[in-house]
Length: 306
Length: 266
Image 1 (cartoon, chains in turn cyan, green):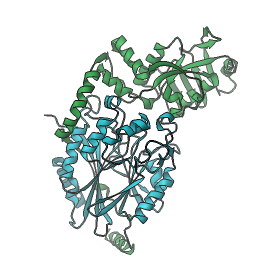
Image 2 (cartoon, rainbow over the protein chains, first blue to last red):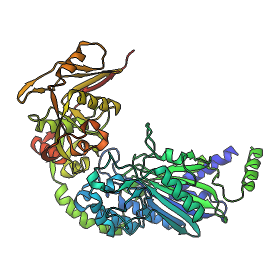
Image 3 (cartoon, rainbow over the protein chains, first blue to last red):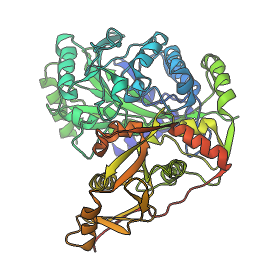
């Protein structure tokens, strides 16, 4: 048994070296439906691969686009998601205000993003001004924007249908006070992440009948204080299957598993920052839409050198 | 092993609908590295923007003798930025405080371009000066220790357990409007030592002028000792302060000098 597992593992690694389709090697039952979740976070206006330092030659949005296309070409159902802080970090943001970031994400086929604290860096008007360039929705469930310019420009949740699989997505933003200057977030109201998560995950699961519930979170992975984090959110809620996190720039080489209020497993994923990595999580569901298997792959994006 | 599998199987059948209690096999996680060529469509969208960026950002401002990274308790980058800011305003400020989180990239050894400084300090934050009394200064130092270090310039601090001491390496306190004097050593909560007396003695008359960013002065990173203070705007963004310094110096460097130390009692 063990030696066989070792064999499969080695065979899978061999496949990984040649292509980026390690999940196929595990797919022994053809009746299972496969859903591929791809995720990024904290890309911080990084357009090009790093030119120096320890990340030299790593990242790059055009390189990421190539890899995402290759994954789409595998023919599985794909959801491409981001956990916020798209803005701020290179002169592209200082000069163009996020226009290019949104255009590129739209071209790459991003399905949704949540809003990070740095997405407020040019104020609510700065964010709203760039929204026409984004052909994907911003989902955040615990910011009340009703008294701001963002009202009508965001979603509390969204249900995606991918090959008959219903995926419910909601978003959770971080507390803005003390983090973002008040003049930038204006009358945005921050609401309790745990309450809102329980409310929207229940709505998505039990009222709207979603098969998978994903939370796009910009809370941060974990803290040594009582500050609410993805780990805390996972343990104090029900119905969430996967938290795609950001903010702390944490690179998790595989999703961390936390028990929720009902003792069920919640996966927390986060892939560093600046587009150095793409997170990939493959769900395999049976005909009754029950999850039977999950594979994860952390993909380091590298510039091809001639 | 077989028995366990049977139990899992039976349990799975007994649960009516989907249970999310699937079995996650840790062997089904992998890390791979993929070398990719740039997507041509994406590149064509980027190119006109890149031309605009490059025309401004490729200007070489100076050369760095070393690589500077941020970090705690002190760092080459944190010392570099706070020292240069304080230097530009040493006539109207006593110390400078920034936040580690606000330094957004590393400065490489070698040529430093305008673009590199934008990546280090992408924010539009401006320099402001506000005044703290001695007790508020201790709150600031305590905060820095709680955070295990934040960039600062203009003083040295050390702590032994709950006892916190500032030494006066560079710090100058004003007396009245014009007279500057150096205080040899001041201490807080050290329990009955002579230094405590000095704190209470200077508390009423001395103000420490702190150069910082408007982000921190307005409540960023919860530096509560800055709450409700009058802010003097010096009229310069932090990024421009760094750019000005680099252009004037041509060659830049930094060093760790033990400005913050925590001693453990044996």
